[in-house]
Amino acid sequence: MNKKGMMLLKTIIAFVIVIIMLFVIFSLMGNILPAFEKEDTTVNVFSKLVDDIYSLDNGKTINSLFTISEDYVLVGFNKSLNYVGTGSYVDCGDFKIKKINKPDDLKDKGALCLCNKELWETDADACKIGGICVELDYDVIDSENECGIFILVGESTNNLKIEKNDSLLDIHK
Image 1 (cartoon, rainbow, N blue to C red):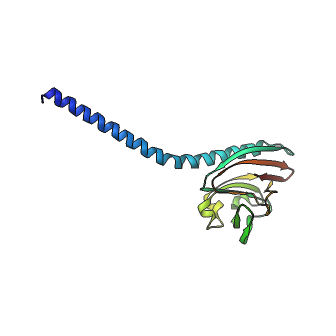
Image 2 (tube, one colour; image 1 turned 90 degrees about the horizontal axis):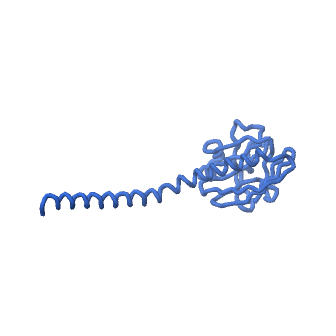
Image 3 (tube, rainbow, N blue to C red; image 1 turned 90 degrees about the vertical axis):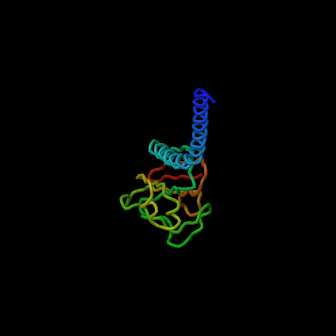
């Protein structure tokens, strides 16, 4: 083979190797990126939910689509209590709850928190340690839940009905 032929062959081999490497990299990115996108999506949807709640007038009702990943728990807190639950497991229909503490900086305030589910299963301070919480001037309840506690657990998409009246924010599926 002459020098031109060898140079052309080396160029073609290098080009094929680059194409294969790009294919492998894009395949790996397709498997890795959805985990980050899912987390970002839940946080972004939480932000939209909070915006919907803040813009809701007293005495009004809205529906808000909320998608939560398996990594999070959405919890509502009353102003007068610094926790939800009783300390022993209680079956509340869609979920069982032991106790979840409200972050200290929200004492005497209503709150809605997006908390780490893994921590929630083992630590009453899950929302303090790994949570994103917003302060509300309302008690947050779920009037359609047998315990009256608003919690969303596990991966799901929900059309939440949100009603704001005086000092009460009622959120339910």
